[in-house]
Image (cartoon, rainbow over all chains, first blue to last red; front, top):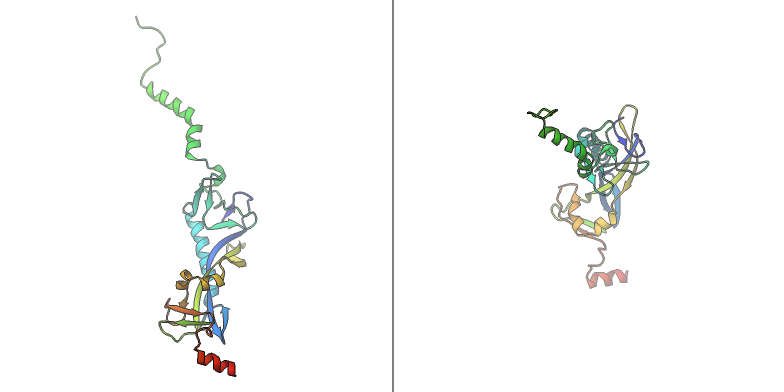
Length: 137
Length: 87
């Protein structure tokens, strides 16, 4: 398993935008569109496969760098690859730190941890003082 | 229709990059298989759009200076037209 969709948990079928090369030729005033070949080597096919492989390997290797923060859905979305089953862009590596369902925005995270932080500051403020159990005479 | 390379003037073959959306799958051995390829851009729009003309390059010399004539009979002289009509 290389990639996983965080919405439908599909890990097999994906979509990606790739650049492809076509050859244009005019014959008797007609436009002919075909794969481009250099000495029987089909460069169009090769370019498509190479570009697809490059993008997939880049996403697998970089993971976090291939993700962008989407403010509407408040989740990380893959900039290059989407799920072919549900169309979701929440595609990451499995067991990723960037798992979109586990993420929360900084504001929400600060708010959720506010109480804990207040307790921490209180502890730090009185940390060097012993509790006074009785009044000194 | 006629496409001319303004740089070498010889080639009749030109290259045009197009974006396509590719559906692929991971195989058991982690290799990739392509299931479907769908164009994202219209080739007709790219050929008629002046900004996209720079993306077309000559296969022979690689130059982007390309001239596209959609109807080569538009620029004919009156004499040529009347000669053709006479035929």
